Length: 254
Image: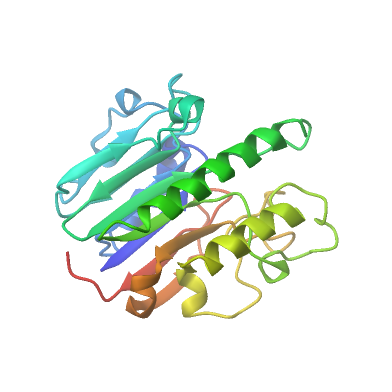
């Protein structure tokens, strides 16, 4: 089973840069797209609704920011939108497709504007709530694959210039500690199961690839899927946004 995820910087902008043409050649079972920056009703072109996929969207309440989508070849048993996190659910940050024994989710975590450090407290609140949710669902008799733009990294190996970014949101000590604790609790960074390379980045906040790269986009999976990871890659040949697509293959049947 192949799952591709990408943070689009606007799904219309990514489409203009050819992301759907590229995706049509990848034989993915799931496509998870974050940061749509528009509502589903704004998507009139059929390119946004490939015939071979079932398309599901969860918009920001204002329809102009955030937003997530899942494209699935096999129709899910249920679609869940939001996480029950009060105001955060109005921002279009989470959508989940449920199958018999597996859930595939698409997540867009809050990002802190460099000019507004006060947003960090709200971002921390989101991750505190998310941690509690992820520990709760561990008790369910199903496996989880959560694809997304997490807006944090695991370690210094996931940032091109750790010294430069030591005080930047996404690489703060408390954020890395949050991720460490989550991984220790029974979740797995799927990409790191197949690659230990320290030059694999998915996001370039300065807009220029090759400098100041971060690996903020990844698949978090439940412990039971650790040995089902077959392949992982970050596609960097052609840019569709400031984030590169993450391609993961799993030895899983729905």
